[in-house]
Image (cartoon, rainbow, N blue to C red; front, top):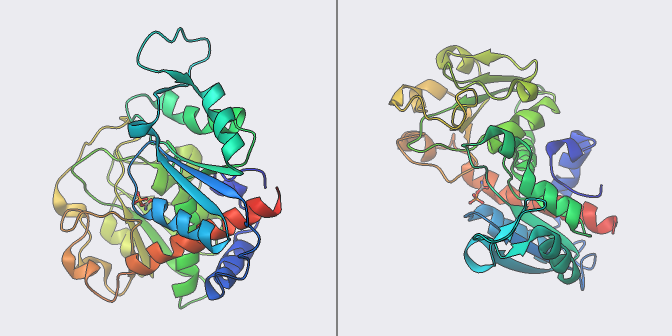
Length: 312
Ligand code: CP
């Protein structure tokens, strides 16, 4: 594997999950693998889990992490080809990616979508520009359309907590005050499509995800119906894909409640808005796996970095 930009970079989900479990059992086993290697973590957007867990993963492999808030602290980066740079951007990605490649053996990038320009967002201009102009492996720490470190984490967490051989997993939309990206939901769909689970999606009318990603996965517009016999309910808000980036529903009838999820385990990538997305009674109960899920971010990232280091 040269880069990790998408769930499609996972060649065998079952093997990857077993490898991640082995790393979790013995996190420092490969502490010499990354000795004298540096990873640069470049954040165009905010983060708590990704920022800390990816550093922890790198440290467990003996790597030196360096972190930069690109939007706040670096020169404004230009991504357009042939642009006359007489506006706000001061440095072109061609130089920026080449320069950072000299300091780092792996570069990880977080760059969210505009949610106003579907074509631009789906072109993955920032992530793909790093892949094109850097000379080292690139890791996607959440791009316009995908969050594959989160998707791998979620697959690991479901595998660890499954009580039956083929659990029923529901991805449910829930309300939110702001327009949010589709990246987490997209990567979760792609991860579940690689697992031996009964997987369905529940979202209101007007919130169907990109059909090129959902493919044959059943979509319910009735949450209660979708939740029947669920073993896991994975909740996430996303803005409309069809009416791109718009919030077309805000009322609380799709908020996740204890009554509704019944015996199912609750997952969410975090951060989560309490009593908007999900009620306290769920998050504060034994049904919630969100803390264990966030812990697994370290081992998912560690597995990805290990595979990239082995290929350097
Ligand atoms: N789940 C996740 O990616 O969290 P952060 O945005 O805090 O990194």
